[in-house]
Length: 173
Image (cartoon, rainbow, N blue to C red; front, side):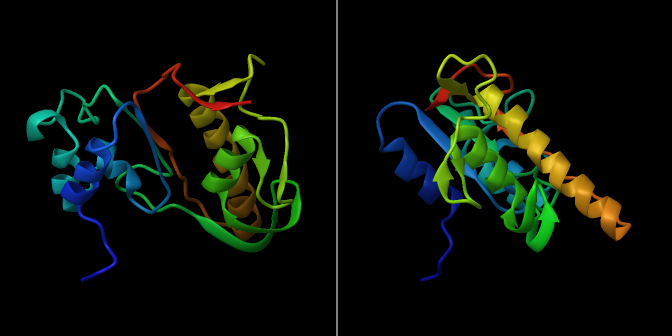
């Protein structure tokens, strides 16, 4: 009786929903659910989401009805900041991934209001998985580069996405 959901429980729940699923995960090491990273701890989770329990050639989620975006690769942490001057905000608090994801889809979580879907680069009123992941990665890079430059540190956060470069629409802009 814990608060965690196992890979098989999540897979079972999602498989019970007909149609295409868009899964967005915001946590450290989240990319391991699609085999993006070297985190062997989560191998059972990866196996649960791959066809027949066998990893595909690239180790990605092998279900044609799944589109997945993770805040970071399976071997890395996902970064949050508290009252930090970045991304045009005097006191940014939160996840740089979530901020980029929300703003890319049309919501500014800091101002708590609707905005133009910044990830809709071709202005067709649809935000695809590829557009959203690219926009979110750019926001993550900006936030982390600002922090690292000011604090004399170095780290990165690389978003993991399956399938890569997908034109699947995830939001209407």
